[in-house]
Length: 265
Ligand SMILES: Nc1ncnc2c1ncn2[C@@H]1O[C@H](COP(=O)(O)OP(=O)(O)O)[C@@H](O)[C@H]1O
Ligand SMILES: Nc1ccn([C@@H]2O[C@H](COP(=O)(O)OP(=O)(O)O)[C@@H](O)[C@H]2O)c(=O)n1
Image 1: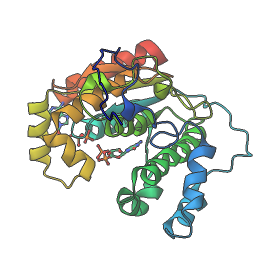
Image 2: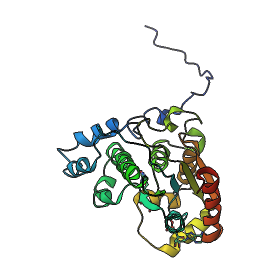
Image 3: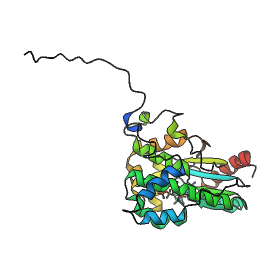
Image 4: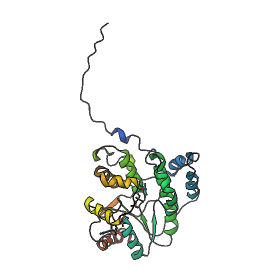
């Protein structure tokens, strides 16, 4: 019997999507409350803290009205100056300051940060819905400033899921960058960007503990670039980029101008 076979190497077109991007939807990024809720609900048996998360969640039956006042989200990598800016905006605008994940989730965070991506991401996704509920209440009384929101949840998740260089990210306009249809859309999203060396200097000066993911950002330039690019590609309210390297006061004035233009505040 003749066992010989001939093999040929033939060129083929590059696939449209990098294989690491094919499984993002509903594994790394959840596009509805129900999809994220289902994951946390199912972990109840092995993670007792999942029950505590569910107790914090807003009831889905309640009809929510749009806040009367503008809601401004500030995004950016760790140490780009979000805390500094959000606190100044709160004081200068007489606004309420909220964050995602909300304060009430803080005691549960360390537990979910240890979990595999599916569970960890579902936890952070639900955090946005709790913050949205708080925005709905506070936004009836005063403008609201939010320190991180959906952009952070999706951008970190996408950048972690996609291996290799920035060009492996799903193309701009891909459905992975869409905004969840049942999640409140802020009036304005500002993305603070900073030169990597200046960011490192600020991190060193601050000298605080960081999440493992943030430590990874420090020595992984590629990951940092992917997070920033994913931030820019997320649609819904697209983010407006602001260079955060000038003084804190100059950054504040720059963002105040944007808010005046967009939200008339
Ligand atoms: N515009 C700025 N210029 C110089 N240093 C800044 C500026 N904004 C913030 N910082 C400093 O950089 C560090 C990180 O800022 P922080 O507001 O905590 O960032 P984040 O909340 O994004 O992690 C802090 O030590 C802060 O005082
Ligand atoms: N809205 C949010 C906020 C944070 N996160 C996650 O939390 C991490 C950053 O949170 P952090 O507490 O270090 O950020 P800072 O507010 O300290 O800058 C990232 O690794 C994200 O994965 C999220 O998924 N969604």
